[in-house]
Length: 110
Length: 130
Image (cartoon, one colour):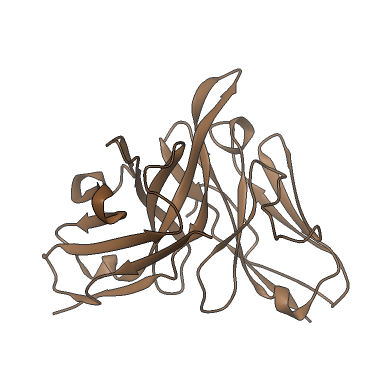
C-alpha cells in the first residue's frame, strides 16, 4: 500500500489529453514539492516534472504538472503511442521522514 | 551530460550482503546541492527509495531499511556504493542509482527536505537466491 495513491491505469486515444492523479496528505504533498517520472517499458525512470510544475530541459510542453492541496496531477496532451509507459509521482513525507512514491499508473494509448 | 552506471553481482545468497557501486561520469560527485541515491523496484512493482548520501557524509535512509543499509561515497573514483545486509528473497529487485537534487521546502508546518531524482542509472537486477 503506497503512501501516495495513483490510479493503476488510464487510457486515451492518440492526440487526446489524459490526466493522472496522485493523492497524498498533509504530511507529504500538501506541504512539499511533487515530482513525476516516466518509465518506458524495460527502461529506467526519467524525470518529467519537478517542484510541482517545472519541466527539465528536453521535456516537451505536452507534459504539465499541477498541485492543489494534498493532490497533484500530471497532464499529457497530444498523446502519442510513444507515451505508453508507467508514470510515478514522488515527494518527501515529513512525518515518515522518507521519500515516497505513488504505486504507478500505466498509460495506454489506444 | 551526466551519466550514472550501476555495477555489482547479479546474484546474492540469502543472509549475505548485497553490494553495488554507481559510477558517475560527466560531473563531480562533490557538486553542491546534490545527494546521491539508491532506489529499488521489485519485479512488477513500484519504486522504493533506499537512501541518499551527500559527498561530505550526510545520509538519509529509508527507516524501513535503515538497520541493514549503508551508503558510502568514494570521491577519488567519483563513485558511490550501496550495501544491504542480511538479504532475503524479498530484496530481489532492480536497483537504480540516481542523482538526488536536494533542497528545503518551508511551509506553515515547518521546513523539510525536498528534492527529485535526475538522472537515473539504467538499473541492475539483483536476485537473492541460494
